[in-house]
Structures are given as structure tokens and as C-alpha cells.
Length: 388
Ligand SMILES: *Cc1c(COP(=O)(O)O)cnc(C)c1O
Image 1 (cartoon, helix red, strand yellow):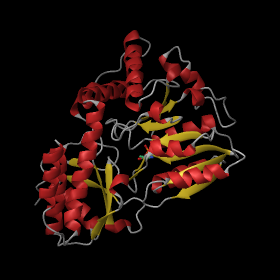
Image 2 (tube, protein in one colour):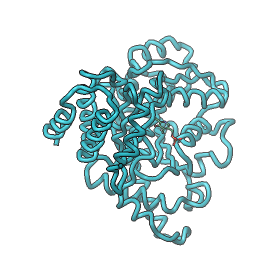
Image 3 (cartoon, protein in one colour):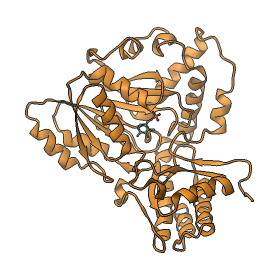
Image 4 (cartoon, protein in one colour):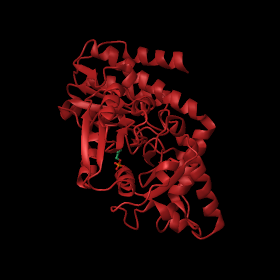
């Protein structure tokens, strides 16, 4: 039999759960896309996106997923042959490097495995670039495959006065982990609608520093991808490169309203506490079982997702989906994917939900004979008691 109930829980790192308020805001007939109302809502959304990223810079939208955001950034700012340094801490960083290579960039990867990119090594590499040939430094703030979180402020400081653009993939971190784009000196920020922004997939955004926004088009810049008409748009269709994604504009607006009500610092602190709950549970389980968090250094653990090695993960995930109505993430990019999983705590996630996720995981381990140490749920509850 199954004890799933009628409302399954999705704890995969994107698309993340969409709050009922966002679903309701999106559930409407299409308005006049040439009318003032939608234009005003869109203007409010852009303000909200600036607030979320901590920038007074320019926001450029695309209808597309995170990959579209990647491609939009490089298609506007880089040319084939340009030297690009990609700091990799997992599968998403690798995928980004592949995309840049396919666009013809001279990609150099610095691979940090399941650790955060080391600012000292980055500083050393850039100092050796006396010709200033490196045009961009790219890094995922959170690599969703490994669940490594990079120190964005530290990496920017490590770049010193090197003129390379600092390009940050915040697809799995915006609205989950701190982002102070202007204070930290990020030139290009990339994010998409379906992770920390709590909406369905379908929109991605670039945030640009004044320096990035004023760069000339490159040979890769084709009309639809060109960010300049979007930056100078008089009408919604110019801003979005065609018909605007009406329901997403309403949904994203509502999602940002929810975050404004909670407060951005509180949103970040909640994600950090949820990550600590998962880490505390794994700490107890692993004392009596064959499992371990992917990221050893607590300071490098992602706020929005936790990857782990766990013997029997595939069977456990199947059991949870069928018996408990819980879907966990697959072990993406893991050395042994059948024995790896990811627990997302991204966007619309809270203490009760995470206690439920961890409780169901423990039930599944018991049911499937996966050995695990005691005390995990007490430890997770203890985090809630201390942090709430
Ligand atoms: C999800 C994700 C992507 C890719 O986004 P898609 O919407 O799947 O194209 C890129 N980078 C990171 C860090 C992600 O988490």
C-alpha cells in the first residue's frame, strides 16, 4: 500500500515547487498585451528582479530556460576565440564550459571537484595573465549537481584589477543564497524562473553591470539574442523579443511579492537553516550507514540543494515516490549515480516540509533495509528549534 496522500512533495532542484499564490496569479486569461496594465506590471517585475539581485543595473529577459541565459550572455559579450576561464565545481559548470566551447571560445577550465573554487588559485592564474587575454571568468554560485556553493565576493576580490568580465550563474541560487551584485562587483548575472524564483520553467534573465551593458555587440550577436533592443525597449514586445510571456510576468511578480513580505535576509536565512537540517540528519545517519554528503566543507555547502552518496539511493528514491509521495533528485554528475541522490530545499520550502522529507527518507531506509545511524530527526528538529 501507499501512504502518499493527495499532495506529493517535490524536492528536486528544479523545477521547484510553485506556491499556490503564484499558481493563482498565473491562472488568468491573456490580457491586452499592448495595454498599459501589463506594461506597468512588467515594469514592477523588473524593479523586483533588481531588488532580488542587489543591483541598480540593467535587466534583460529571455523566453527560455537556464541554458538560454547562458547562451544569451556569451552571444552578446564574447566572440569566438576569446579566452574564457570557467571555474568548475560540478556538472553544471562542465556543461557551461561545453556550451562556450561549442560557441568557439578558447575555454580554460579550472576544476575544483566537489570543493568551492579557491580564490587564491584564481588570483594566481589571473596574475599570470600579464597580457590580459582572459575576457571572462565564469562561475556557478551554486553548482546544482555537486551542491557546492562558491564564494562570489571572495572570487571577485581575487580578480583584483584584471579586466575580465565576472559572469555568475545564479540559476540555482538567486532567491536562496545571498547575492549583492553591485556590492560584490558582478558584471553579468544569469538566472531562470524555475528554481529560487518559484515559477514554472520558461523565463531567464541577465542582470548587467554598466560596464557589461555598454559593451558592443559581437559576431555571435544575432537579432533575437541581441540584448540591446531589449535594453532600449519602448514596448513590451521589444523588451521580450516578441510576444511577452504573460502568465510568467504575473507569476514572477507574485513570487517576488512573497519574497518581499518575508524579507530577503529572512529568505536567505531560511534556506541556510534548511540546508543545515539536511546536513544534521546525514551526520547522524552516516554514523551507522554507508552514506556521506558530497561537500565535506560546511562553508561550501549549497543553501538550496544537498547532494549525497547513499548506497541504495535509486531504490530508496523509487520507494519514496511510490509509498510516501516524495520525489528526490537523481545523483546528477555523481561518480556512481545509482548510489547518489539530491535533496532540494529551494524556493517554496520550509521546516515542516523538510522534516517531512527527512522523516520519509528515514522510513524508506528502514523499509528497504538501508543501515543508518539514529537521531537524525531529533538533530533536524534541533536545527529548527535553534534557528527559528
Ligand atoms: C538548472 C541549472 C542550469 C540549467 O538550467 P535549465 O533551465 O535546465 O536550462 C544551469 N546552471 C545551474 C547552476 C542550474 O542549476
